[in-house]
Image (cartoon, rainbow, N blue to C red; front, side, top):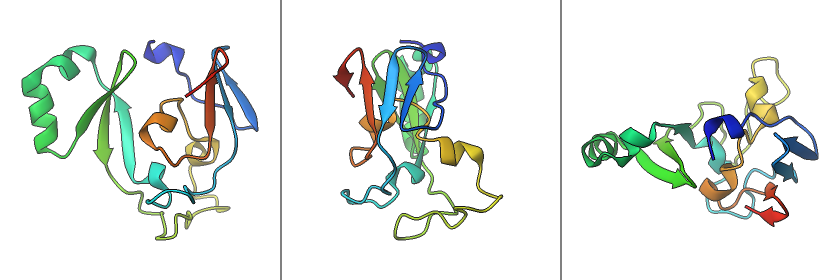
Length: 131
């Protein structure tokens, strides 16, 4: 799996991604999980496999509060950074306003969201298998 095979999702009840991934469901602000709006409490950014495989680099990231997680063969840097617009109950304070980024209303952006946020109410399917 490469980053090129995980383009941004389009908004919709069953959004198809690159002919491989299908997202279904809707956002419930992680109502069944311990962290309301969990996906808005961290950033997951792809990093190079070389950096993610280097123990010194991984240690450097860890000293800065960044965890490296692998999703298949794609390494991700998980950065704990709560969105400044996230309210304590998991709602977005910018919801419905022009200040809210389009990225937020189209998300989750990638199929790895389901693995990183266990309470996410979206379901991702690949070739008939749920992620």
